[in-house]
Image (cartoon, rainbow, N blue to C red; front, side, top):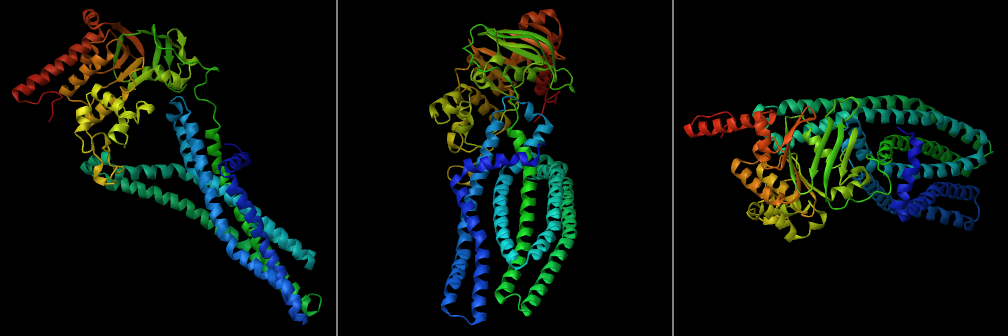
Length: 614
């Protein structure tokens, strides 16, 4: 992690860009408020000296007016300061949050989302990105305010006794050392308990999640998960409790020293006054200055500790926002032209890191424009990784992916993806309206009901959506209420219904050159699967498409079928050619066909066959 001080310019830059007006206002208010106790102490001393000496009443007017003004300002300015601090804190937090997610959104690939270490750093950045900047800014301003107040009182105290200034300052050093040391301890504790807090949050989400509720209640695992969550919370509390006890013990000595210095200073000033060497005002000023300096230095130490702790944690934010591009590319980047010839993989090999095995090995493939390609194979054969490379979520470890003969690494990733539409096996279920769920397939279509409905019609989802309580305005899921703020508006769809919505989302942008279908019918019943396959067959007509499927019946209609095994292409050809070759594809197809036949026969005889169910 970078040094804490390296994060300070970043935070100050955030504050200035987010809210220059409130920042200046808070600084000015802090400087004024910092001077008020000093002015009040001097005014009080002057009033007391005049009264004690029996002087003219007119001589009391000026210091009394100053004292009254300082009191009025002390009463009013904190409210203005609180308003300005609140506005500053909100603006800085918003700006930091927006910057963080702008950077996260700029990650072109998936590597940083699939790397546990990167995810840990990102979660820490999410947590401290909103909390730490306001704490650093307001803490820094509080530190400045304390420094100004202490300086004013030290100058006042110096007029009474130089040695008292030295003793008071030196007595504050232990408190400063303790605060800074505890700041490092607190920061280490936060880093240590972060995994526990994430796991505690995970258990809490499980216990409240509708998807997990079925299994939790069926298997009776709720108490077990709750016990784990409670154990993590106890471990977190124990870590913080240990720090609090350590801090309390460590602060005892500095507190005793400060108290002793205050008592000694008070005794000395009283003795000096008794001998006529100090006036009543001098005694008042010395007592007030000693207390104010000790309190101010203690406050400064505490503020400095908060700032340092926040800077340490904010280092995770600066590391995330300062990362280089995850998919480097030459500049300037081109945008791909509409696909005319085809897509080619030349000698493509890929693994996720040096610690992982090869997922793809020396793959050569060609997908001519306007044709359909089906990729089949066992789990772990590399089918989904192939899709990730085509979408440039990752770059090949070796080899090249070409778009009409151009390496796709020369294209801006976002421009390449404008040419691609896809529905993934692990598609998203957005807790938004049905229309919004579909419209997210093309951001410019989100407010175009006609395009959204046309996509639903193409996916065979229009009847489904129209049958919902509010049609396309129906909220899907129950995380949020609908347009009428009625919690009953949210509708839960079945897996197959959600898949139709996801399919419609992939069909919004009909101008895409490449359509990728990753297990597009895996959640559908046989009848619905047949309907969707017919829809997709019509939509793929004349288009370049890639189908990933375990169901070979869906793949047989493709112009060409590729069989992957162990990351290698072991067979390719059309359905008839591969069946005639009597290789792996033919064996897999025969096995699946036999399974369907057995299930059909068992269903006809009333006996549950393999894979049959209610």
